[in-house]
Length: 419
Ligand code: ADP
Image (tube, rainbow, N blue to C red; front, side, top):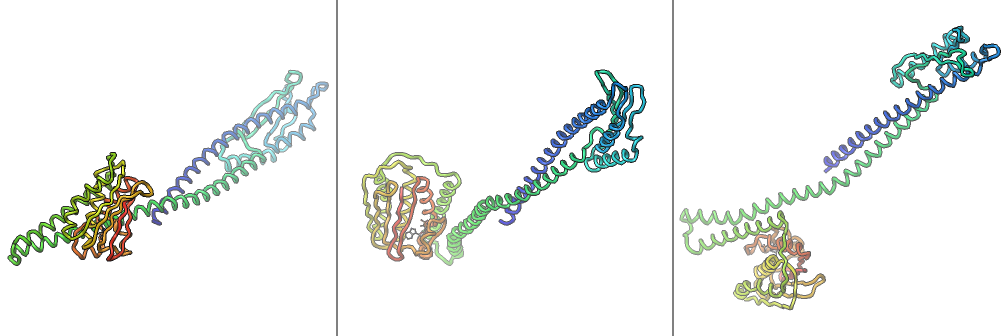
């Protein structure tokens, strides 16, 4: 059971982790692609903003640029990752970040390259773009902006991405922990009934095989012994011995028939052929054949009948009455057998009471199990297979009914069929 539970838990956990991994991968890819598009747009907008800022420094009166402001702004742009160079329409340099501070420019580019290649796996190179500086719709100069391309993350964007990554890792771990917990719970809930049912089924199968083997062995050993003794001349093959052999053969035949009926009921399910009839008529018909045998034993058979219409399977119910009545006759030596039909909780109750050997308290709950026979009935050599009550119970259940028994050892038993 623990094995099955563990295996189920492991399977669920693996499935959930795989699903999570796929989901995380998909979310990661989507986020990266959306974010990089956003960043590309930001870079392009920032470049245009830089060009506008520089254009504002153009003085049309002098036809020159405010170099001091451009230098201050330009160093700030370098810090952001934009290496700017401004020149006039004639190609004269107004300001160039590289000429101004080559070391800082190289440092910034190296930092960005390391960050983008090492941390984000984006292999790129320095890309240059030239923008015209317009004043009153006329070109007055050019701005060259070098940036790491195809795109690069600024410090703020890098911090934002690492925050998102941390959040994803923590959420992923929490999800894994929760899913492992759920898997363990789920496998426990599912494994329990499956395993218990399976183990119970296996136990019953083994028990049934053992019981059937035992039930077949006894009459066969008896037959074998008698026949061998007759062959060896130890016993005479007289009528009495042959009759005893015939009895054993009949017992075997009835056991095999009972097993066959039970197997049909259990494997094929019980298909009922319901019709309307009166229970009294059925009980009378079922009891008829037992009356001579009971009389022979000095037992009185009494039927308390009443009008009792029912919609049920006539032949199957007859089988139930035959099983109950044959038991009553079989296990009663003196006194009486009384079958009564009365109004019950559901519809009708049929009581079969006898004054026979009775059933011990500890046996009572087990007599409905297949092949179960009390020691008393075995010791007395009363025949029987221990299947009759199992068949009767299956038929009663198929009708939505039940069979119960009350008994006192040595005094008798009452079997109640409720329909
Ligand atoms: P069997 O063919 O052995 O009678 P059943 O399934 O009908 O098989 O009954 C199971 C066991 O219950 C019997 O072997 C017997 O020990 C006990 N039993 C059933 N009916 C009676 C009864 N009327 N009086 C005493 N014992 C009974």
